[in-house]
Length: 297
Image: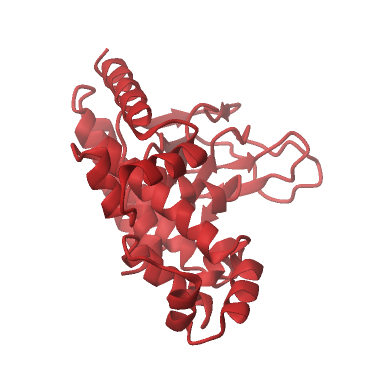
């Protein structure tokens, strides 16, 4: 199983806001800070995208898809904010497809740790097919059909993120590069595929076919933390999603992520998430109920 697919599998919208907007110059669009991710794809025309007031803006053209991470203070405008920017200014009407997205899955929130404030994916065959479909469907989708809007945003969001992760320069950044490493890659895949196994440094080193010292040095250099610390964080992310997405007991969740008893699991879970498993489940369900009520309002 591709580990990046593990992260993308939990990217599912609930109450996503999908809009097809027509704009005439002069115009300016500020992205919502409260959204985990915001997607923007010009269908006609284009705009200048910048993350901060002093950042050099980038021209976003038809065929490009941009994803803005929450709290990035990104702005899209019809003309550049700095005189040093070289490129077109829009004089005709621009049509934009935008979608706001809230990442609630604990596993998928790890995605936010590796994404830049703004990423832009150039035109690709997969994304082009999705955009063409969304161009016709976004305006035609009645406001009451929220689940349809959610799945449409899912489609373009996952296609865009997958395209971004597949770029060679991305594979060499952050902990993502560990998956392609001959030593660290097998260990990461083993932990992701079977978090319930009683992994030790010795058994993980055997997966990599290196000494424990070599594994610790290599893993820490690429991923940024020791192998067993990463394993604990991965287990607690999986556990958090099991608690909120199933009716499994705390004990059953503990066994699912490699803990022999609920007490040891609860201690580790509270250390990572700041709440006991039961309190975490209760709080997430309350938040989900509030979000559902807001979507239905």
